[in-house]
Image (cartoon, rainbow, N blue to C red):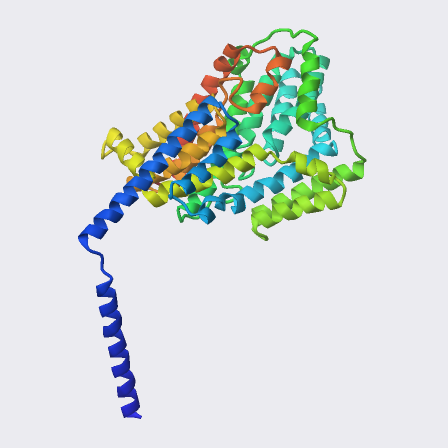
Length: 467
């Protein structure tokens, strides 16, 4: 027995010596190491060039956003930065599929007419008082947009808000811009409220970090929404809102906007309305409690909507915002490439060098917030987040700080596109019907953005310490 054990030990020792010799023989020469480092730098430069080209076309929109986004992984593969499997990994990313499922579930609520009924019910309780009418419109809009499409919510609430304003003797210009802004604010509350929230989750997961929970965005999203609504209802907000009559021709713009976004809704039986609302509530509860994987819950909800007839198959396909889907699918591989090649670190080193080695993370949050927010006034907030989220992650890591507060800031800043009529689709939707001018958005939007910045800086470091 002892001889057998001794023999086994000798064999193991011999194997270890052999394995060590093989590994030693595979050690790279200084020339090979230098060549590999040079190759890595070359790939990082390719990645930065592709990022710059994507940024240019995102900002100028000379070609469609989705086409730009999908060109990125193709270019990354052709330059040898990513393998084919890595380049198309965004199409199978769980967050991409999650948003697709939620588009269908949300569309069912609009399709049956349930969303409109919710709006009618809540604002009917205002009893004709203008300030209560506006409060009802804002609360319903923010609540619906927390789990549904911001654009769809605005389109549903648009004719409701106009009708209420008319019956109460209010100029619609006092109601429609707050409606659009509330849709943007409400989207910050949950993971599925707006694409930037899901996008930062994808970047976190790609960096090896735990993603934010379903309602975790509400940590700052709820205070932002409350402060925003108080501001819009306050004497200051009311004074900054334009108060002008709108020509009747604007009603044609309303009809066109609703038709474009919702495809001409035919109200379905009450049972279907209750069913669509029940499916949405069930999906949200499942996601919030973690009973089921988020993506599976969204897919299951979409399937149930089609099988129960709350939305037909063709309209389910049409309800998916494919621009958002392809933006996700194209930009997530670019984020991975920035991490793998060190391109993100190169940007981070430049930024940290500019801010100073001893710069506070508060300075970083401020820089990220305003850079992201300013660009999102003129370009897609999803595209803006796709550009800045991986950079923000690299900078936070370079400073040795936790990335959570910084990435949450990126998502929230991208949603603060309040100061231009092209910042978000809801802003554009109310432009004609409200008879607004560009400066109207600037006057009401800039103070709101400043308030949102203060809320972010004050709250996020409490829940997500930097160190």
